[in-house]
Amino acid sequence: MDPQEATQRFYDSIWPHRAAVLRTARILTGNVHEADDLAQMTMLNAFKGIERFTPGTDAAKWLMTILRNCRIDRIRSAGKRAHAVSLDQLAFEPAGASEEAAIGAEPWDAGDEPPDAILNRFTDQEVIDALQNLPEEIRWTLLLIDVEQLDQREAAEILDVPVGTIKSRAHRGRAMLRQTLLPMAKEKRLI
Amino acid sequence: MNPLFNDNPADVQLDQAIANRLSKLRSMPVDTSSLDRALRRQVPAPPARGGMSWLLSIRPLRAVAASVAILLVISAILISTISAPAMASPAQMAQFHRDLVAGVTPAMRVDSIDAANRALAAQSPQSPQVPDVPAQHVMACCMKSVKNKKVACVLLKDNATPVTLTVANASDMKTPEAGSITRGGVSYNVQSVGSLNMVMTERHDKWICLIGELSADRLIDIADQLQF
Image (cartoon, rainbow over all chains, first blue to last red; front, side, top):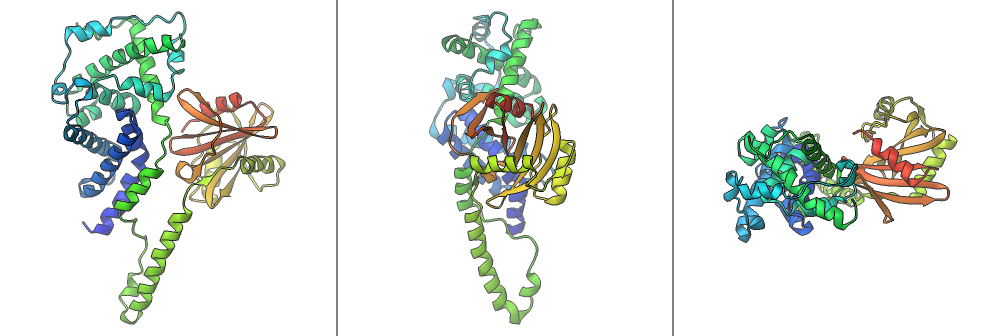
């Protein structure tokens, strides 16, 4: 492809999504500097691989796949383990009985007030901080399904897992998140 | 049966509430300026559209074409410098509102956001798309500029009080520092000029400002109804 054509394709199709990439990176990492680096790496990889992008197809989904690959590369190269749960381990379902028991540990007891009203009192940053307590792959699932509003099939393609795994992770992730937010709500006297 | 997937109505409601709260993160504003700067250093500038190739094909004019190209590069650098976001001055926003209400600004009479978007697009193809405001009475619209950045203005009526909704591309406008209120996960910058209050926010890559002689809470209520 002609370099000018490639550059034009990048600016036409990919550049408008940079805010979404940065926002996703912020939510995923919970760290402004790490998110900036991750978003930059994602956009540069998208530019380098622009010939593989077909105009008219879903640029956001394409970028999410690149973002995910960049994130894996960065975790591996830094030798990090996200919350002691490796990406390899999360390639299959870790639905152990102890985790299920933990999820059901404390019922959401907030009187008659609707949960939506309580959850809306948390700032975005507080919700992002709470998300950091979730395993990486579950966080990814909530990010794609609930934040980016992708359908389960698209999320499954990006994360390279079956749709059933996405359903299970989404449900488990929401349950884990509310278990994180409940004590926070009590501590902050939101309930 | 997988115990994680029970149909307990309370669990279903909680699951949905968590999903709803997470979905609001999608409208969380982010500042892309440092990312933009970093990318501009490593990605070539977009090629200029349209061709001057006919000039280049004429040998005697190649020197002229080269000079023009140099001028274009210099212009591009100047334009990129000028194209920094414009500061949304509260005084200027207040003046937009007062002029629109007083009829000083030539405005087009419209009765819906759809009609406003059509009228504004006819006036300027670069007009930012105005989000729908379902519960408000739409009265008029006009296009303004803040340091060469297009700003769409729509005059609404909230009961009997005029309210101006101004919309620009988020990358074009910068919100001045001020106190902020967060509601529904969205942060609103609150300003006052005389009896006028205004709230500014960014949603869906749009910069939004609502101005009127209403409380900041009421202006946020209206902003909350915006449908993108």
